[in-house]
Image 1 (tube, helix red, strand yellow):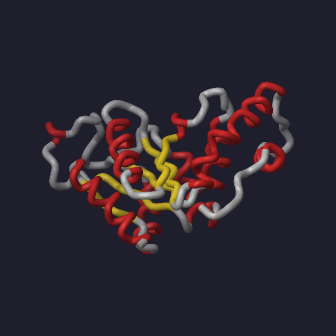
Image 2 (cartoon, rainbow, N blue to C red):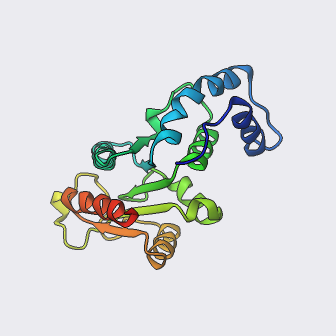
Length: 196
């Protein structure tokens, strides 16, 4: 990312904007001040990737795999929301600020049971997020139900809202479908190749 690092005042201004009528507590403001240093890699990296998905087990293993693969390219900084200070108790604000400053938002979708469902709504509602979002959607058609490690209904793993978002991303050329972890790695590689 070519932008200069963000200042505490700039973060506070955005926080006030996103919180509408609410204001930051003194504790939240202190956490925001401390977070500026943590955001430095986003600004110093050639490409920064905000990786989203379910933190359940075994899904988080695949998020870590995605983060690892993206970080293997020179000048990359890929991270999960949990990699940034836990003192940020307002996860809505944390998501918005991280999404604002990162180059790519990468979602790993496996089902409609938690994960990043709310964030998926922002992908379509906010054009600045949609244009930098890539989603890797797990497909279950060719998988044996006994080999699924997430316990979801393979006949109906996604909600109607998610399906519409997937279609929009597919039309924009930013949806990659996967069944195995090897396929997921290929999705990451295709994203990296598409940037060169």
